[in-house]
Image 1 (cartoon, rainbow, N blue to C red):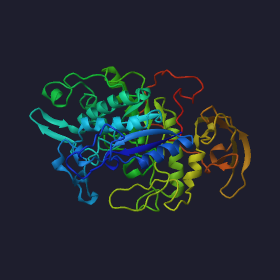
Image 2 (cartoon, rainbow, N blue to C red; image 1 turned 30 degrees about the vertical axis):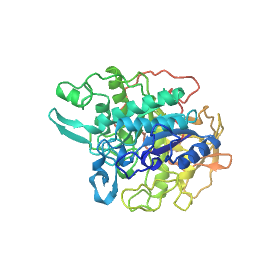
Image 3 (cartoon, one colour; image 1 turned 60 degrees about the vertical axis):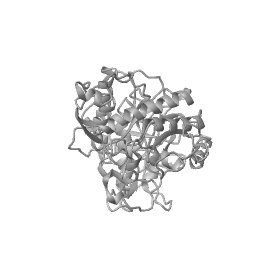
Length: 457
């Protein structure tokens, strides 16, 4: 298991509200006077003490002097007054590379994965997203993502060379055309074809080189973190969870044009479902627990997916602007039903011929486990033992049950002192746009589907 640490360039840097680099400060030297790493030292070291791996994500906001046009800072975030003032204006890739070098030097050998930037397809994090030029409209979000990733990768390769094959690319939000931004960053147009003509140079793609990415990182929320795995989207360029097969298609197109190495996976590094309470809009507490389990079941069938995620662990105090309350606990630490569901995912699916499929995971287990599956005939009836399941080394189990009335039973899994939510058989879970099945190389002993274990992140 791992924890993703969003390393804010502005928060760690001195003189963040100045338009020039502070005198005597060296952004590439993690020991340079003015850097404040304490918050991140505590998180990284604390995670390692708990046996957690670290995904380090150098991200905005940026110090004013970190913009290629510092005079533009501060500005309203995403151009919206309600989000307040900060700086996300055209981050300078050269200076960002120096910041990443400082971070990679400081945390050398302590980071399992690096991931460059956060939701670069949103105006909240790179602003503006497009720019008019004589060659046409430039996708500035994609152009800058490419430049920032290259600068960050070179810094990591120098400062923490052991992690150079584990630098993720993307971290895109599910909405606001992530596919277009990613294609642009890979020097491909919206149709997935190489840029041609004047726009090719304007996008910084005169001689596009292969990006040695470690994988594609995505945040497949539904809009406003609502809905379920069945929620539809009306746009062709979004990557909400029901349409995450688009990420696999994007990787295949990028491989075809030699923009990335072959065989790279998809890393779900952030997703979740809001609850009501505390949010004005959200799922009921029981519905959130069900939705989290169904999302895990959806991703389980995709051989490209290498990790799943849960954002957040705790809800946050209400703040101005857009704040998700997708936690497994309330802001006061009270457990929601989703906490038990996250520890012991359980999904029961109706199949043909009167069968049901029972799928689940024992997330806290280390190695194989023997959870006990129990069933009840009614909401208030007692649970009776059905059978003991056997997990694979990643903690997953799956079996088919053919029994009269199986589709009307209620199911529960238990292991040691943990219990899952009570699950009722539902309809099959699958992407809205099916995957085209193709064999992928992987190691034996992994989960069915032959991909790396999708443990909770």
